[in-house]
Structure formats: structure tokens, C-alpha cells
Length: 436
Image 1 (spheres, rainbow, N blue to C red):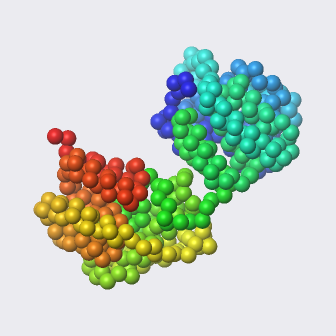
Image 2 (cartoon, one colour; image 1 turned 90 degrees about the vertical axis):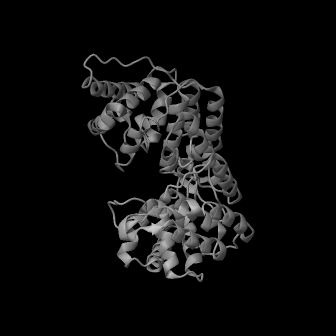
Image 3 (cartoon, rainbow, N blue to C red; image 1 turned 60 degrees about the horizontal axis):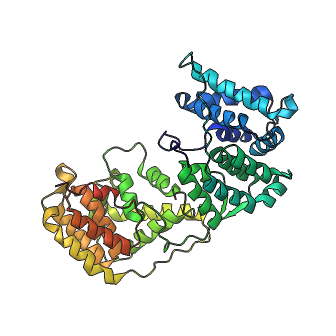
């Protein structure tokens, strides 16, 4: 593909440009007139200090400079907004409407630079990527034509991908999917996500609004990139300042299952971790120590009198609430632990025991010594679950700022591979590696 900027790097987190405007118009839920549509376009162009105006104008001009027929442009536009605004009903053809959008965008940008002239259009042309997008359009073509009641809609989307712009064509395809709401099987959804990467989209451009047929929640699946479960929650509580209550932070954490996971997955993973430790013979003191170390003296526990058991019981209640809402069929199952991994994890933990002992988590009277933390982690590894114990050990290394060698880091990565951790799981740990 031709060199193209990355929308994520530019700060975008959701849809933008012409398709972002189409989403706003569709969200009105009813037909609107030209004045209202232009007002929404002006509001869109005002966003992000003019950056949205750049994208809106570029998208409009990509279509205007293409050989795609006016009939196809109108068909795809009307489908992308769910018929909430049809320029033909207001005496305009599609190109006249796109010209107005381009002028709205340019007008916004001239507020920053009076001499602004729209740059030459640089459509994204990539035959290989275009073929992949077209294959997905054809796979759902009959469904789209039937859902919208517009024969030739899928063919029109193909025309935009092939003859106008792969980037905008793909986004318009996604927008039409979100309006039409066909069920998208997980395998197809994964392919749609994969297509976003070479185009530099934030994954929300694909995910938000699609009706995905998710598989059942299954804690055996490890298809997340970052930390998860109790150690993942502890990371959310790290630091001395939080704008929300402990329960609000917990609820927010559970609402984020990422773009690849079945809704409720994070709650199920966290619930499994917490039930393991609560059903074990670990003392309340050990539970408190483990949480405070992993969360870097996270503030949430203080609302429960500094009692780690009471806090974890609250976590269980919130996890169950989340699962009832998004995955009511899920039944928690504590799957067998990988007991054979325990000796290796304990060996790595004990190798760092001396370095941990001379450090503390927190400050003043509430500070936890590294030796106390190490003893508590050893109990989790040996008596509960080496996987959970290792994840909490990694969090403790960060909290104690224990320096690592490149060789030690590689050893930890090998253990992570055994437990099937994601690529981003060790990001914080790698920062502890000494450069010399």
C-alpha cells in the first residue's frame, strides 16, 4: 500500500471523516433536512481543532475525483446513513452534496489559515488490500442488498473500493454493516479487525456498532494482549490518585473486554482468580499483602477497613453483576491449575528474593517490606495457582522497582509463553531491564 498516515497516531479513537459524519446523521433516528445535515457536518468539522475537517474534506474529495457514478455515490451514502438524509430529496445529486461537505471542511480550515487550499487528493490504492475488502463485501453482498432493500448496494461498495479509495470504501462498508445489522460471525469479525491494521484505524472503527456473534465466555482462551484477572485489576489501582471510587474503577475495568474478546471475559477471568484465593487456606493478612503489593498500595482497599478479604468479596459481587448483564449463561468453573509450573515460578521468585527484601511498597507506616511481599507471593504460587502467583510477582517487581537483566526478562517471557500471555503483557516489566 502507498505510504499513509496512521489514524491512531493522529489521536483518533473512533470513526472520523465522512463515515464519522454518516454515523452522526444516522444516530438522529429520523429523516433530517439539508440545513440540519449541514449543521452536523459543521459540528463534525469543528472537532479535534480542525483535524476532523481535514478528514471530512479529504474523504469528500476522494469521491468527487473518482470515476464512480453519481447513482452509486448516492446509493452508498443513503445506505450509510440509514436513509436519514437523501440529498436527492432536496434537489441535489450526490456530487453536489459532497461538494458542499468539502466546502464546509475548507471553510473550517480557513479559520486557522485564511489562504488554505485543499491539497491534491491522494487516494489509497492497494490492489492486494482491495481484493481482501472486496472479498468481505461479496461475502455479505446478498445480505446487505436484502437488508437495505437496495439491489446493487454491495456492487456499489465494490466500485468505491476499486475505483475510488480502499480506505474510504472499507469504512463505508463497515458503516453500512452497522446500519443494516446482520449478525457477523466471529471468524469474519476477526478478518475485519485484521483489515484495520494496514489502514491504521483505531479498532473501534470496526468494533463499535457491529452485531458480532460472540462465542461463549471461556477463561481457557488467552486472546488478550495485556494483563488480566486479579493482576490486571491491581494495575488499574496503582498510583496514589484516582478520580473515581473503588467500585466505580472496578466497574469501569470490567466493562473493557477489548475488541477481540467475548463481552464478560474480563469479569470471568477476574472472578476465577478471586474465587481461587478466597477458597484457599490463605490468611486475610496474606490476601491483603498480595493486593497492596500488586496494586502499589492501591487506595480501594481502604474503603474496606484495610481488609483484603472484604475487598475481594466485593470484587466477586461486581464480577457476578457484570456477568449477569452480558453473559447470563456463563457458569464459573475453577479449571485445574498447572501445578507442574510451580517449581519453576518459585525458583524465579526466590532468585529475586534478596533484591526484593531491601525495598518497600508504599511509604511511611503503611509501607510493605519486600520480604513480606515475597513470602505472601510464595504462598500464592505453592498453595493456590502458579499462573496467578507469577502474574502477581510481575506486578510486585514493578511496585518494588526491582532491576532485571535481559536474561531474567527472557526467562520470565518463557514462563509467560507457557501460560499463554499476550504480547503486551510484559511491557511494564521490560522497563525494569537495565541497559548496561
